[in-house]
Image (cartoon, rainbow, N blue to C red; front, side):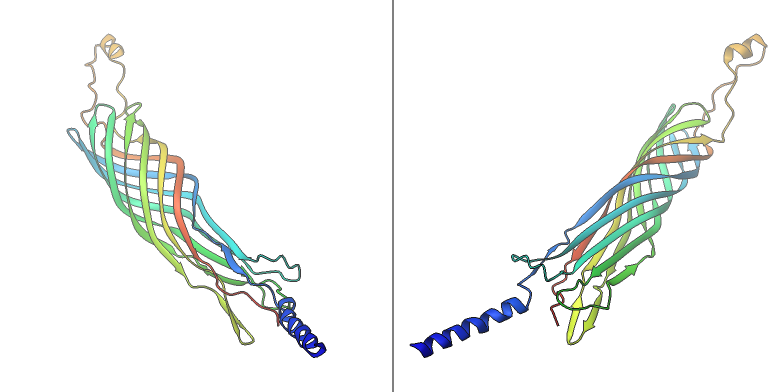
Length: 275
């Protein structure tokens, strides 16, 4: 009986020892998909031709924005053990400027213009990952694992809008754009510590977003005619409004909002156990 008691106690101690020497079972948590919304502001220039009610031309714009999608996460455990600091990660996808070169085709009725537009889009997109390894029971001199990609992307844009001539030279514009700059992919950062390979989160970002802006443009077309009553008093012929008020060069500014830039993260599946 005494011998059985000693053996049982030894087994309990033998199984209990690893439970205190090693961190409890942990699982990755967080790192969900993310998207963003932001302001947009920029400048625009273009040229129109008008044939009857049909208006067609080319337009380019360049805008700044701050579309910043972020996903964070780490590891969680059902047991809160203060002896371990588990790894955490942070992934950020960002679009900070973009431009377009587009064709426009519209239908004019008096001072109103309804149009569609499509063409080339380009912009600066980035994807950054930081994976802090934590301490988890040992001194770690590696520091965080990082990965970064930051290219100028090229894609496409489509949209439409409505424009109103406040005067023959000044117009007010409301426009919608869908911009797709393609996808950025980033491999998971990794490091080898002893015999173990530690891997952080992988990520991909689809740099596509929607934009709604309100803007004003100055048209370098025919100058505004003098009031008919003034011309009549002077004995001059009354000037008729131009038949193609939308034709010519124009420049302006736009401001509004944007949303999109979807970020997807593949969580890490390992953490750094104690030495």
